[in-house]
Image (cartoon, rainbow, N blue to C red; front, side, top):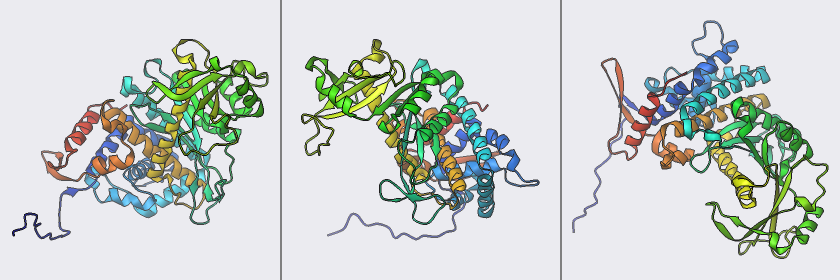
Length: 460
């Protein structure tokens, strides 16, 4: 019997030439050019460029961000770009990279302000290029989701501390700009905090909200919708939101007064809730409690909305659950009436803040899972690099792919496996560098089309 699946003997050597790995990373470098982020950072970080320095600090910072977007998780992973200067240009040495991060960390708030200012300017230009695909297009709301997460530290690092989950590390506050069901999202704010920082600290929520708002073009502030969980349902944070006339949808704790009001609700007050597709959901209802509560100490026109649902089979009931149903509350300042004021629509809008969990997960796949540096200030610079990497990826998807294409919603792991890691042969001639992707690579045409689309866009 003859075998039909025999494989040829494989001989491996390391003498190949004019071959580049991560050729799909050109998507990220083209976004750097189109957004003007590299030029903006070059101007913002000029005070940290040493006389006669070969490498621009902005180039080092953007190279680190690209390395994180490609899957790196430490400063030394910039070596991935160093192996292909034809695609990524000259890359600084490890000592140069480490020295720059140390200098930026020593500058503290001044360096952070410089990076954040360049990010905001680049974001405004990218949104203008994206047109109808950009957040806020056509007067739509711009959801900004705030949430905290735990980052575990496996060694002693400055200001690492025991967390409320009985682990050891940090408790950063995040704010992500949601792109809706047709996209992913942008990391507006990654604010590093001690591991023992509280989940309902109003000052931290206000700081994160203020930094996130600074990342959004001023003329779009009236369209911003702040969404958070019940940890942000404090007087101070809601007062700050309403003082800036922002829209909000904030989780709210079930107090004794709220539980008593729920029991007084007549059966006809409950309306059917919607599922994720906007269709009536079986076993879930919503109702308004505003008229049954004393709201004099809270912001004017604040509404309290409660959701009732039957727990899924096997779910363990909590002490706040009544009559075998699970209840959750949130507050909003959106007035009744119209499509946006209906209870089921408002509750669905609030529930979609769960997409923030997806954004946190993808950020942890882009360097947030572990903070590799020792000092607190240096790790805050690391968080800015992560934000840059997340933004480059999100901007590439927004500008290079149509809304209906699945790649518009791919998370970093899938983008790396299918697009960024693609290899290519480099052919020089006629004063051009031709990047020839493998014909058999299933996503070669998608990569080539996306890069061509980015190359056709004007830089600022």
